[in-house]
Length: 164
Image 1 (cartoon, rainbow, N blue to C red):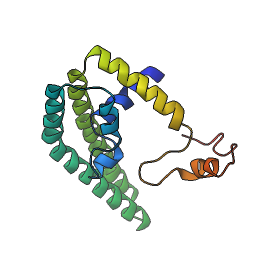
Image 2 (cartoon, one colour; image 1 turned 90 degrees about the horizontal axis):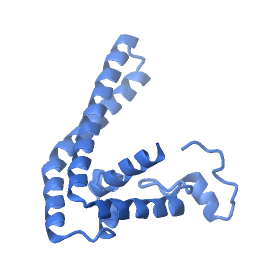
Image 3 (cartoon, rainbow, N blue to C red; image 1 turned 180 degrees about the vertical axis):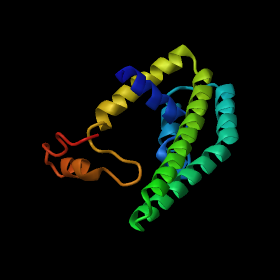
């Protein structure tokens, strides 16, 4: 199961579906992973084509999910009827599923570009990265989080037992 999770994460990162990329902040962490793979010019061109072709649909799907999430939060605090909340929650889940399918399709397209050796190199790099950063609460948007901040301050017990 860990290998499957690692593969999904690795290819998601290569596909450019990392949080910084999703937020429109460039290609983020995924580009650093690609730099490790020694892609050919043809692979780089294909990757850029995949990104360009899928970016508009992914951006719209993320926007839709954010809007539904905001609407649900607003209705929750406005004490809307349960049936209305359930219906909105179902729409939100459908939107999330659609977004995840788009991301997965993109990931598979990128995966198809990589050679078996590049996939193996990517997995090796991801394992090293996870070993180095995995327990620090390392986050894209909000910094290291309490565990990472406490660890940086020298409190090695910070983050132990915290949910991930």
